[in-house]
Length: 290
Image (tube, rainbow, N blue to C red):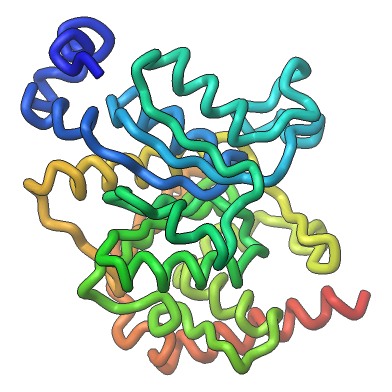
């Protein structure tokens, strides 16, 4: 990879907000992104335009018409194609010298070591409902000393949670456990993502389909999520800014004009958080019996 030439040409407009040394560091770094759909695809493209030079992408899914409203790799020419392969091509269109590994089978315990190999950051872009894969990945990243980040699109807003290798772990923050039902774990995950559920005021909860694992999502929320997450990736790789890992969190709702930089004391063991989990769980159970 001709880093000097890339900095002089493709990424020259980054310089001034990034130094040449910082841009060189990004071009030399690898980010592992699981999921190449709504948020994952935008994470990938934004990081590529920021000048991250190496990627490992994983997604077993293919694009379809229902993706076009919010997934930036979705178009009529990409329908039926693997999402990770499509995004890999888009990355190479941005930076022909980018080094991109693709796992079209997704991530599992069998290939997680290969997926995270040489990565400086794990980026979570998988579907809300794929919780066990997410738990496995965040645990493995912590074991390997890798930062892991999730940013969920919620309504017309987004959240940000950063997990540091030496900080609070995924299960402690969210309250997910091996000996809980999937519905209870999803309720805990939802409560931890949005300690202040601003979007509930205007979201039609009847459109959340627990059985078919579908829910409302719009493009602006995905764009915001990518802005929040990719900025944290830059800070982690460059290493010159303080990282506010969980139990710190950020929530923004553009529709209601809300911003919260919070600290979830004790994570899921926070008494108020436990109450929120119980309430969300009851709503999930109601959805499941319909």
